[in-house]
Amino acid sequence: MNAWTIVTITVIAVLVGTILQRLSGTGVGLVVAPALSLVLGPAFGVLLTNMTTMVSGFLIMLSMWSSISWRHYGWIIIPAVPGAWAGAWLVSQLSAAWLSIVLGAIVVLAIVVTVSLRQLPELTGRPTTVVAGALGGLFNSTSGVAAPVMVIYSRLSRWDQRSFAATLQPIFMTMGALSVVMKLGMGTVMDGPEPDIPLVVLLVCIVVAVGLGLTVALFLSRYVSALTARRMAMTLAGLGGVSAIMRGVFQLVA
Image (tube, rainbow, N blue to C red):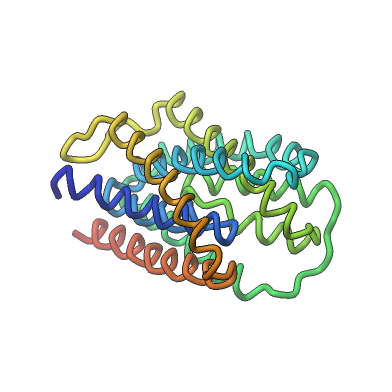
């Protein structure tokens, strides 16, 4: 696969993920992580996904600032720190094949749980928040996907949807930053895509794609409901997750 193809697929994945993120509240990690893992490899693909959520979370956060619950944010992010560290360590221990399988399995399992668990008991205590934050940090580092954990937590805690969607943005931004810092600090991700593409080029493409995605989402919000966007995100994520599992299995048996 040549450099232009890799850049094009990266831009399309980030663009679609950002649009769905803005329309439904979730989408970037679910869509981008499986796609980039197939193109760039699971370790580097998830690292780039973490960087994408930093950019998208920051930009979307600015437009939803007044609805953010900083108290919820703080209690989730504090336990996310050790979770992100554990995830970065796990990435360093797994081969590319097993990491691809783990990533795909997390995505598929998260979708199944999110869709099937409609009625959940009310759990509003602090331990629930701490567990959600730790698992979110762990899943974000290993697979780039923390949204399903947060969705389940919002249902358990009966979190108001408007405040939840807004607070997710700084949560995603910070979890992405934690994952990037942990991985780079531990030397977890050393190899980039083949052929070699400068990281700065990929980062510029991500920023441009996120900005364009937010602009397109502003227009589409008049015609596409949040429910439709969420279903699209789940469908694309499911396909990507299954593909990641198949790739990992093929690598193991090859």
